[in-house]
Length: 218
Image (cartoon, rainbow, N blue to C red):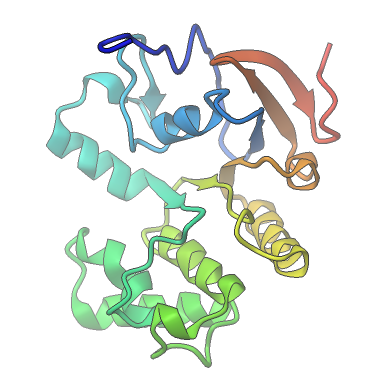
């Protein structure tokens, strides 16, 4: 029906502690990506509140919200969202430009991140010259570039073969073990089971919370 309202999320209350690795699971259309996009400050809730780093994101004007997002959040997209005309280093360095960091320092940090993630021999390559796994590593490096407090990943292994997906999952686990807060959405049960806590979504509601085994908690 034209003009009908769709409630993507309904009475969802979630707390993610610093240093956690949280998975969001559920069938297609369950609201898991919408929840992640709100947590990652890509969307705003139409009602209720969302407090991130002491700021109620739902009420922040656009400019302060952009500053909070740039300094606090890293986002990893399933489709990578790399700019095709930019090199690996330039793609990774892009968020640093929004923080007012000079070009030399941006390049230094981006190069350091690329090398850390196994891309040292791909620094000048364009996205079309990369494999899917390499492109996702660039996307992860770009998310890490501003030194965020939390990284939100939307189906980070969804477009990858099983071997490459396992490598990306291992990388995320390594980053988490280093203290990074990670929240990810995945339809892959193996990926979700690797997290510490699982939020199960159904029809826009939080149906259950499970541990890393994927089993709902009591």
